[in-house]
Length: 172
Image (tube, rainbow, N blue to C red):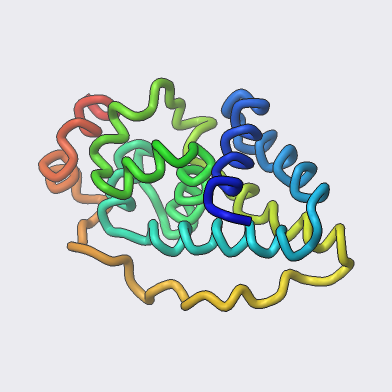
């Protein structure tokens, strides 16, 4: 599976689920189960590499603003959700997390920002196809700490200064 096919699966399932991350995960499992197990592993590899790539202090700060706080687990689920938003939103956020203020049309902190189930979709599909756990993806481990300049996700003044567009949209 190449990168284009990966993003196509993300986009078509998000559109069919009308943005509901839980429904998107269910649809993604269904679509992945139509593939051979090796392609499911390829999908998992694409997903996991982006998940690890998004382990950035700036994204954690953005999540804290958008979700009114972000613990370790909340940030993990936010990264899954961010991947589920598609290539344009994901890459835009990777380049400049403050752009999420413009990249996202609608956002409801009660239902958006939590893509936990998306993170397990490939594992679920692989297990249903083979009866076994997903093999090791051969990717480097996530760093011990997020990359970039640290930001305290509880320091409102620092968040407002670092992410002015997000702060204006989600906090003021």
